[in-house]
View (cartoon, rainbow, N blue to C red):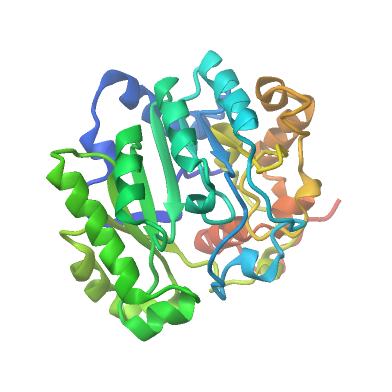
Length: 339
């Protein structure tokens, strides 16, 4: 039987998530759909979440990041036009969209209209708005303005606990400045008597960071609401799992779609895949998100995953997320699909 595990690579190490704190009926229904739809292969009328790439530009040069090596799709730095963003949100609101993440590649705080984007989406009724950031640009003014928008949560990527380790991974960032920015975010929010945005500090749990992870958790407890980690994709090669048959399906196809800054529609986040055109579903400037979500091509992608044949899709066969999940399932090398 095909296995599907929503959020399989994400783990909370300490604290309470926004999902523990927020318990109203609409929010609980949103989270029920997030887990139950992929488990039972239920295709909603519209994606539960849209990953909207506000920008693919970044101010750092992290050695493990695909943006640094320009190998996560054809790379042309750009910023999503605010009018295009409004169009996306308007269609989403009409169709019951629950959540948006304003990051994919790049550093969202670089976008000059990020504050306006969050405010527009929140004013339109989007339930859960969040983004990932390196926190290098979170000064007091931006923090206050982000809080004013009603932003629900913010995930801060921070590798390592020692200054030299952190700065070796987050090349271009200054350890003391970023720690101070995160502390300021918590201080300003608490001083204003608010619970949001919920603050998560997270790391990719690279093999060389595992030994110091208890110290990492201890350091961030009391500053962040939640300390979390993502499984490392560096312990296995994508090539080691190419062509393998597996009773596994990706949850993303039942949960979300991604929209690049230029409007390109993708069925998922396409981890580590070098050519977005392998699975692009069109452009939101020309087609509706709803029609694309329900399209013949998107349906074909889901059917191949449901039948354990994800390897027949070249992008999925190359995907680092799939490789990591197959490794966990104990799928052995050499068990190769053949027609």
